[in-house]
Length: 67
Image (tube, rainbow, N blue to C red):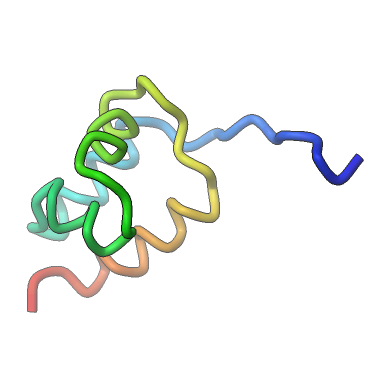
């Protein structure tokens, strides 16, 4: 049962909103999350679902914004 995948409920709109409110670029957020720009772009376009844990980490980074 430990390998059961949970469906992510993180929407592409939520990802976009968190990033744009922070003033960070897609590339900057991708670097903070240590993923490729392509992976981040796919999350933001809704092509691939972002895990809830990753979204919480992203929100944490984005709440700090550009420094």
